[in-house]
Image (tube, rainbow, N blue to C red; front, side, top):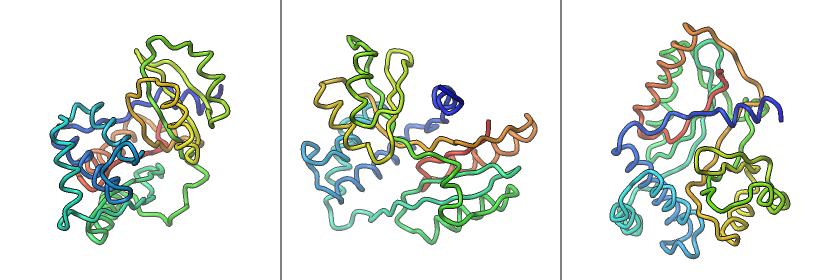
Length: 235
């Protein structure tokens, strides 16, 4: 299936390091979803996904309910989702996804991280050819015939799927997120999580010493609560 498939299958993203960060991510996802389409998960698919992802992160239901109620208040934060691109150490390409109530603060911080570790911000769209933008779903594998599932999902934008532990990971194009979500819900499968990933079509191999330089930048990004996700093409 090629290198892209192997990269996806082998990807091990750094997860949120603490429960406090899980709460921050969930609160922002819920707030953005509620402000876009209301507090009812039955009619708000984005909120439905946020709630499911919160469950996967072991965030208590009470915390999610409080986040929904807070998002309805007049004083709730107005988050903007902004994507930055930049070069890390050794010309490693990065795409950084943020959700912030203060874009001026966020862009200054992101720029400083790249600069501190020998990189720089890049113009929007610089890495469009390097990264694919994918929809990623994870469902419980119990009772599912994976070959039958593959045939059923081809017409809904399926690109590839593979087993992982006790789950099945499903990849579709970015624009096929809604169609795939609907297809899975209609099939009645148990959805574990749903998210977007940016996977590199062009990778950059580094020495262990060079990788250590990049990890310093990654560690700094992990500390910033405005940064929700980051993706790079280092292997």
